[in-house]
Length: 304
Length: 276
Image (tube, rainbow over all chains, first blue to last red; front, top):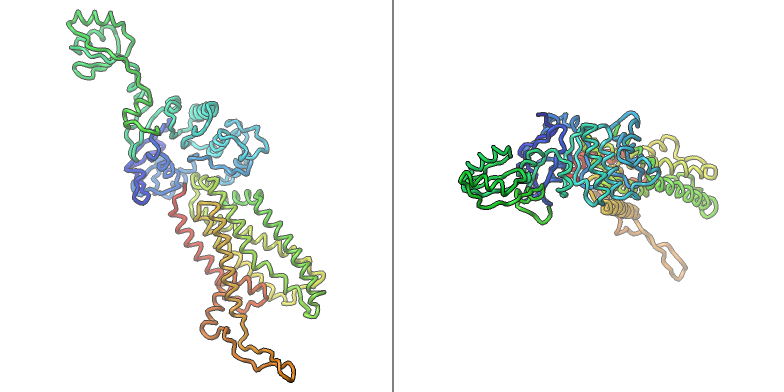
């Protein structure tokens, strides 16, 4: 698998506080990587490091195969765009001039594609309106538009839905999906809104106290969060025989418990199991979401 | 670097503070010089003052203009977070620092240029410079170099402080402090060696015998005072304004040394600075 970003035991200390503590993560090419963690877990610190705003205390990372200590890392950075915390825009400029400024920073010979970017983020009709008069959602979209100048392959978004109204959240989500699906841009996105993230992400990284606790794909998460019925029976071997016969997915947890991934006819199943001399002790429907997965993984939190 | 300068200049031409400073400098130069013309031709006509007496007045205030403009201009990059856009796309912090310095120098020199244009309003009345072309070139060189030194000092403050309000306050206070310090040195050096008073006797008013002035600075201390006056850009500004530049080479070299030292130390700290 090709990776856009790989970090290796990254550490960042601010005096006595360890914001990152040996964090290792891998962002596959083409993914929307959801970066989940509490406030102060180290999400923004990691983003600041990979954007080159700060230097790691120890550890390293590779961006498009180039190590952060490599002189040519600037060439890899040229392929990325980012919105870190708040959108980096000149409030006293129009959307168009903000983009022109970024074109110049990148040294692009012309303003080709500028109007397309504005159209993509839905800011093509803002005219001479200055960014200071934009709504929060418009500013966020302008921040993303600036990050998109120069056709980056990798977009880093730090809490892009923070403070947005429901309409704004939907607009940002659709924009991110469009960029990923139509332009094959890899996206690293940190968010607190787990429900929102679950509608976007193809991969997840769970961070706690500066460490990556778990990294998995959306499919793996889906499997972990599938709706199921947890059954406690006297004999799981008999249960397995019956479920195989019914062509139902299941996972044996212990010799007495199993997760059954289907809506079963309880009377029919109990009767069939009784024929196999297997008693049903209890049945409990389980419906794990990203949020409950996160809570069970991290141990819950006030801010998550 | 070229890309960063292009972006900085793009913003400079659209920056309100820059144009306010330019406009203020133009009005200030015209008003000051016309007042100078009136003074030279009516109030103090017996002194035969030339344009030289008034033309370099801006040298004492250019530091303040530089501080106000640059702290507002680059403070915005921190307050709006746009400095991040430069780092994220791969520009090195060294290049960002140097591009900011060059932009500040350009803007401040443009303000100097505007003064010179505006101050030319006095030429038809007071005539051209009496100091001669070679002296004028030397003075212009000193002015350019002290402007560069001011820009280097302000860039150091601007790039290391992330709080715009704090940056503006510190930049202006620092330049004001240096100006007050230079004025104190200049006043100290201006003390006469001997003083003589007027005595009223039965025969009328008589000049008393000159006595040594206890405030006169002499010996090694005087050399130190002279060195600091030549070394500080605010001191150079005062000397240039009074058309008393005695050590032009020392002044130019001092400005160069200040520029190099502040830039090297600024880059060193800025490279290590954690940007947010």
